[in-house]
Image 1 (cartoon, rainbow, N blue to C red):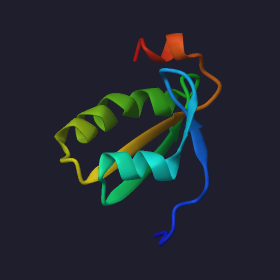
Image 2 (cartoon, rainbow, N blue to C red):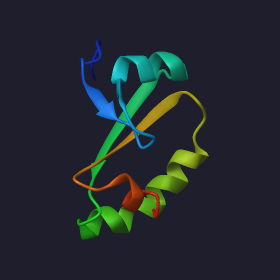
Image 3 (spheres, one colour):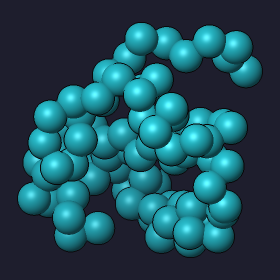
Length: 79
Protein backbone atom coordinates (compact mmCIF):
# COMPACT_ATOMS: atom_id res chain seq x y z
CA UNK A 1 0.00 0.00 0.00
CA UNK A 2 1.21 3.46 -0.87
CA UNK A 3 0.82 6.32 1.57
CA UNK A 4 1.50 8.91 -1.13
CA UNK A 5 0.40 8.80 -4.76
CA UNK A 6 3.10 8.71 -7.43
CA UNK A 7 3.33 11.67 -9.78
CA UNK A 8 2.12 9.52 -12.70
CA UNK A 9 -0.16 10.80 -15.42
CA UNK A 10 -2.42 8.67 -17.58
CA UNK A 11 -3.89 9.37 -21.00
CA UNK A 12 -7.66 9.64 -21.02
CA UNK A 13 -10.00 7.87 -23.43
CA UNK A 14 -11.50 11.29 -24.23
CA UNK A 15 -8.03 12.63 -25.05
CA UNK A 16 -5.43 14.51 -23.04
CA UNK A 17 -3.68 13.40 -19.88
CA UNK A 18 -4.42 13.80 -16.19
CA UNK A 19 -2.32 13.25 -13.07
CA UNK A 20 -3.47 10.30 -10.94
CA UNK A 21 -3.57 12.58 -7.87
CA UNK A 22 -6.10 14.84 -9.64
CA UNK A 23 -8.28 11.85 -10.59
CA UNK A 24 -8.33 10.65 -6.98
CA UNK A 25 -9.09 14.13 -5.62
CA UNK A 26 -11.96 14.66 -8.09
CA UNK A 27 -13.47 11.24 -7.44
CA UNK A 28 -13.33 11.45 -3.64
CA UNK A 29 -12.14 7.82 -3.60
CA UNK A 30 -10.49 6.34 -0.53
CA UNK A 31 -8.59 3.72 -2.55
CA UNK A 32 -7.27 3.29 -6.09
CA UNK A 33 -7.03 0.05 -8.07
CA UNK A 34 -4.82 0.24 -11.16
CA UNK A 35 -5.33 -2.62 -13.59
CA UNK A 36 -2.95 -2.98 -16.55
CA UNK A 37 -4.23 -4.89 -19.58
CA UNK A 38 -3.95 -5.13 -23.37
CA UNK A 39 -6.36 -6.04 -26.15
CA UNK A 40 -3.78 -8.42 -27.66
CA UNK A 41 -3.52 -10.38 -24.38
CA UNK A 42 -5.90 -13.38 -24.34
CA UNK A 43 -6.10 -13.70 -20.53
CA UNK A 44 -6.63 -9.91 -20.26
CA UNK A 45 -9.54 -10.04 -22.69
CA UNK A 46 -11.03 -13.05 -20.91
CA UNK A 47 -11.00 -11.35 -17.51
CA UNK A 48 -12.33 -7.97 -18.67
CA UNK A 49 -16.08 -8.79 -18.48
CA UNK A 50 -15.67 -10.00 -14.88
CA UNK A 51 -13.57 -6.94 -14.01
CA UNK A 52 -16.28 -4.65 -15.43
CA UNK A 53 -18.99 -6.44 -13.40
CA UNK A 54 -16.84 -6.06 -10.27
CA UNK A 55 -16.28 -2.34 -10.94
CA UNK A 56 -20.00 -1.75 -11.49
CA UNK A 57 -20.82 -3.50 -8.21
CA UNK A 58 -18.62 -1.20 -6.12
CA UNK A 59 -19.49 2.05 -4.39
CA UNK A 60 -17.68 5.35 -4.97
CA UNK A 61 -15.00 4.56 -2.38
CA UNK A 62 -12.67 3.03 -4.97
CA UNK A 63 -11.28 4.67 -8.11
CA UNK A 64 -10.61 2.09 -10.83
CA UNK A 65 -8.00 2.94 -13.46
CA UNK A 66 -7.93 0.49 -16.35
CA UNK A 67 -4.63 1.11 -18.11
CA UNK A 68 -4.31 -0.27 -21.59
CA UNK A 69 -1.19 -1.04 -23.59
CA UNK A 70 -0.71 0.15 -27.17
CA UNK A 71 -4.36 0.27 -28.22
CA UNK A 72 -6.12 3.10 -29.99
CA UNK A 73 -9.05 4.83 -28.23
CA UNK A 74 -11.42 3.82 -31.07
CA UNK A 75 -10.57 0.12 -30.53
CA UNK A 76 -11.06 0.47 -26.77
CA UNK A 77 -14.59 1.77 -27.20
CA UNK A 78 -15.58 -1.62 -28.60
CA UNK A 79 -14.93 -3.15 -25.17
